[in-house]
Length: 161
Image (cartoon, rainbow, N blue to C red; front, side, top):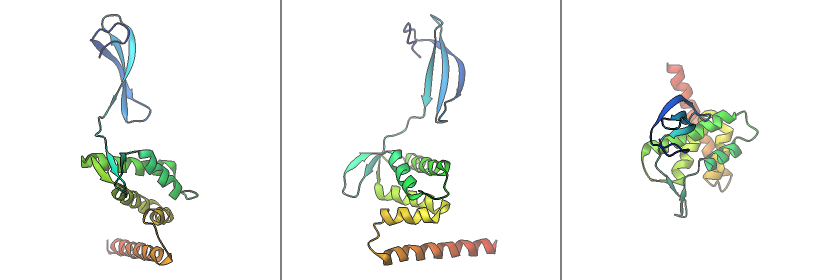
């Protein structure tokens, strides 16, 4: 690592610890030439993801858009900020692990709904109503029927265990 004070290319690591966000490593270094100390951060290199919108426009992936949608869906619901952040992080990790440079906004929406369904059914329905563009009450009722059927299947499996 090049010293910012004198430009010497060699330094030693004095201290290493996780950064506040737990997504990077903070390292205190000391220049072997001038003995000045400086801080560096080490982060995992990620591939840039492009989101393909419904109208075929392309834009850079923005985790804050996902979090914003989740926040709106969970408004006045007993869902903690940590749970919402965890859903967002899980989705971002899934997208990075797929190693695909492009992803459709529909796929991201499905991942958000999967995460919300497990945490809060009302938030799930709120998000689904906007995401799936419910046109009338029948579409809404059909989605509720799917949820109720899914819940009954889960209960049946638990009873069998």
